Amino acid sequence: MAYYHIKNTIVEEGSKKSPMSRKIMGRIPHTSLAKPSSSISPDSMGKDTLHLLSYKGEFLKPCPGTKEYICCGYQILNVATNCPLDCSYCILQSYFLHQPYLRIHVNLEENLGAILTFIDRDPEQIVRVGTGEFADSLALDPLTHWTDILMRPFSKRKNAVLEFKTKTNQIDGLISSPYRDRIIVSWSLNSPLISATEEKGAATLKQRLEAARRCQAEGFVVSFHFDPLIPHKGWREGYLKTIDLMDRYLNPKGIIWISMGSLRFMPDLKPIIRKRHPGTSILDGEFITGLDGKARYFKPIRIELYQFMRRNLEKWYSDLGLYLCMESDEIWGKSMGWSPQDSKGLKGFLDDRVVRIFK
Image (cartoon, rainbow, N blue to C red; front, side, top):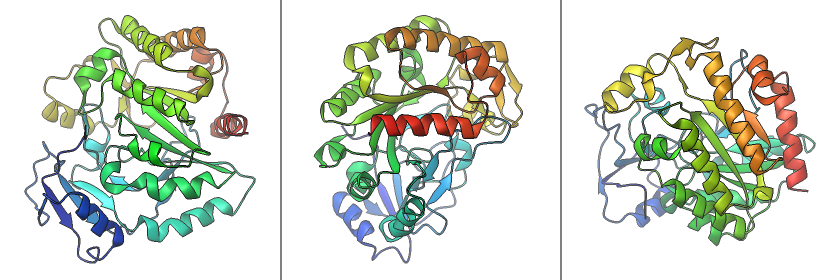
């Protein structure tokens, strides 16, 4: 099943002769060519339209963490912006409100050499790269074939890993590739209620975990992200059900890491969520303004969430590489029983996991 419903395609002038543009157009023969419109409703964000363009910025950038919280030192590979899924809490609704459509950067292959040169400049430095920050890594892979483009060069680099982060079960491109080394396949997970009501267009939890099981059977290293954790009625029972499903489908020894983060958002996202997702309940919690200007749950709520998840995940398996996303040293200590102290420490922790798992 495809997680996109493409009705129109916009091909930016100058990108029509791109090999990637031609290949994508050949894979969706029934789409209609269109021109950019200034009247796209923020409610739809043009999620039924591909916009093929040449990206003018840097393809590889550090994750935009803030100095107030501990960041993992991730590198974002910007292959596209916007997502065909429509999660109520998604920050992309704010980031790209005025840049609608599913924007595919068709000059990726032309810029791949510069990306690899950056990685190769220091062979002793581990570089963790992911494509899932500004778009789902696999939802559009049947059209874009990002897996074909990226897996081979990354699998040959001993100081890098490439993480495909998704909420889908679009793994055919991964499975058909002969490359496994240095590739991480990652799924965002939540409680059954949040997954069913707040993650529109995503695969079900069962479908995601079935896909993860198949990837493990095919020799892939996998990872998971419980982000955002959202307290809701029956949340403890709900998250336990997700952990029980993980136990049913997965070999925990093949998991490189599991991150945890709680719902947080810039103030301008709140009215967008209210308008685009009027039935949501995710904004009903108690929030304060964090050091980064984002709305966050009160500290005791976050600590309770993380302690509960850590305790129950570690009951399942004690060596899952658990870490927190964008939290303070204080929250780390009270939630996890230890702290990397700063972003450099967390990067070192995750880099060590890479060395150990891909030894």
